[in-house]
Amino acid sequence: MTHESPSPLPTTTEGSAASAGAPRSTAAKWLPVITSVLCIGLMGLVLALATGEREEAGSSTPPTGTPGGDGARDAGDLYGTPSRQKPPAGALLSCGELDPSKPPRMELDLEGGAVDFGNLKQGVKLTREVTFRSTGVGPLCVVSAKSSCGCLKASLDGTKRIYLPGETGTVRLAVDTTGRMGVINKRVTITSNDPKSPLTSFRVKMDINAGLMSDPQYLQFGNVPPETSASRTLYLRTKKDDKDWTVTGVRSARKVEGMKPVTYTFELEDLEDPRYRRVKVRVIHPGLAKTGSYHDRLVVSTTHPERPEVKVNAHIHVVPRIVFRARTISLGFVRAGTPRAPTRARIQAGAPGITFAIVGVEIVPPEGESFGPGGAPFAATHGKDARGWWVDVKYDGKPRKAGLIKAILLVRTDDPEQPELRVPVRATLQAAR
Image (cartoon, rainbow, N blue to C red; front, side):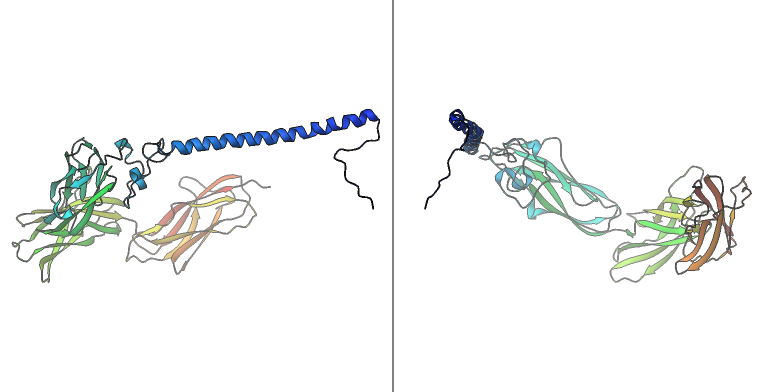
């Protein structure tokens, strides 16, 4: 048995010259492959060396994203010290670089960790200061002081923001109890470069429960038809042992050019309460003739020695008795001879307690205009369902000149004070295909 081994080089039946040239041709084919392998190996060696240099340099140069590096500081790991409290990203960038060997510290000169304003009267303004101290071995940078309540505003006193060890600063608290009532317990937060506590906070407490109190601070008379009065209730109270007092008047303090001040009336009722003297004040708005939205500032006069006036905001919205929910009924694009579902408009009472019925609907031309030979371009029907009265409007389908078509939907009601309603109707007639 004869075993044939494959030749490493291809054979040829050409002459001896061809046989001699075969090895040189095969070597030329393998040369690019060998070169590519060598290049890849060389590139890998270069990358490995570069990586090793970066890793070695990393022992002395902070990576990107940490203090001392080229990137922004990570607010969740300030200066390498984790904190459960996280200031807003970028909040401490103005503090400059931190020397980890000289960390700053903030301490509050605040007994009990809270500020208690005690019992306050409604409608007063007062301030208080809280001192903080730089107790670390490095400079303390204080960025801001903020509160979580609109009645309490916190701010840093002055323009100083960098405090060397031993120096002190001040947070100013401003309280406004206008419109407030009851116990308020809020928090003030100070943002700094303290690596252990970048957000230092303390509580602020107050009980607005002294003197004459009023509630609510806003009387909303709601939607009211023209020439219709409306009333809302204001409650006043003092502690049982307070001096006797009463309400002597309610007036408008807002002056509007071309409009007389509203003349309010009121009714008083003493309410039973074991802890307070409570008075129910029923404030009556006489109503206005013109529709629109009106804001007012009421002054309730009292005989209370410490609070002779109680100021309350008020609002009334004078609306038609019956209103369309849409100002214009638009059918969009229509085409003659092409059926299309009607567009529905809802009609409803403008204010609670008003009842009405629709007795007829009609399509009429806009004021000063007339319909062409084809007559009214729209047809209307009406009805009532669980949601109330409705009117359906659709194009009559007759051929007309292409373009914008306008009309008025006239709705007749059984309400003697508003027997008719009018709303514009429009559609764009497309040219016939």
